Image (cartoon, rainbow over all chains, first blue to last red; front, side, top):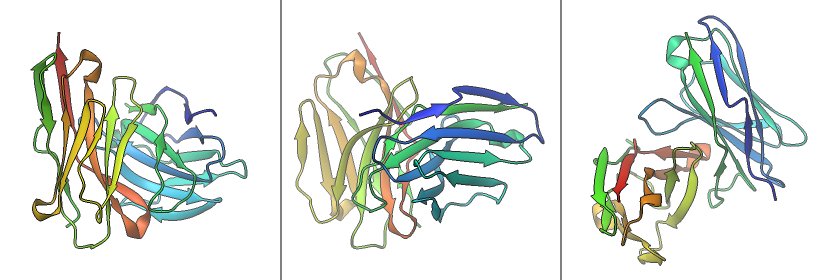
Length: 114
Length: 114
């Protein structure tokens, strides 16, 4: 059973650019959540996808968008990058979207916006 | 409010000492779930425990133990006979049912000195 993987590991962009981060869920998991973790802070929920549809969203602007594919891999897209978008972006997958299910996290993508 | 507070920003102890990490949460819900995750330097969050609000029994897993007290809204984590490998940032979290997301505290950085 493979774990959650994310790519790329690190990324440097300039303000105003667009970025796509990728996540491959743990085998058999149909739910994926994305979190933003600023330096020295706890992760903040961005959104969750369940079977290719958005299932919940945190307090992030529309320039943060996502996709989930039939194989349950996922993308996080951020448009018009701002300096404050610099953070570790974590993807987490779970077998179900239910409250009782455990979320398993990937190693994250470190995004730096200059 | 739906906050999770980890008042201890950093803790440093000598190996083999016991250490307790505090977590206080806010909730208006009668049913909720609490979590602890460990984040080593590699970045990925490692699941440690999930506890539901109806189960107030303390839990022990090897050197780890958790004390859940609804009366004080606390869910504290104790490491007995700490080891250098326990050095990490530890996050406490609460499940927010309306959006299937975890609200995390700001974390406690634990350093175990040899």
